[in-house]
Image (cartoon, rainbow, N blue to C red; front, side):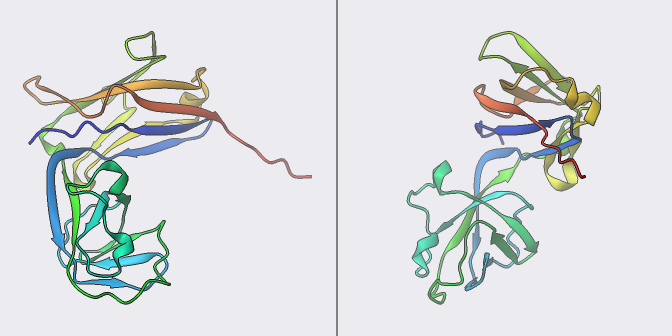
Length: 208
């Protein structure tokens, strides 16, 4: 199973503690059969044993109704996917979609999602940030220095910075590439080279 080279967009607040999850998709689509779509806000989709991790992207396909949720393309394109919230082993929600006004569920449909890369196969990760693709190095993060963390149980690579570390980032935007490394040295690229990371200034409020 190889990795789907997504374009990732990350954002850091300068001077704040950073704990950003990076979810790494393989290039293999999986499908969970939909059992129901609830008229709720946010919309909830019942698909028994769906297997979708929390925060993962999924696309709805072939629902007879409500058809508003269906992907426009087969196979689904990036624009067809929505970020999910895993409610339990049978239900996910699309937090950005209000389904309270949808017509009742009719029948059919699948939740399509890319299987996670098995992070248990890797023992380290690294990320380089540059001012442009192939340009000057702005920052490096890695599991060796503790700024990246592999979380196989939750299918997630974490970018973790202390408030002091993020305060030292003097640049505002860069592009990055990131890699996973197996014990034998085999390297897996996990995102496209034009993935972006933005550093914004923390807004603070003073109280009289």
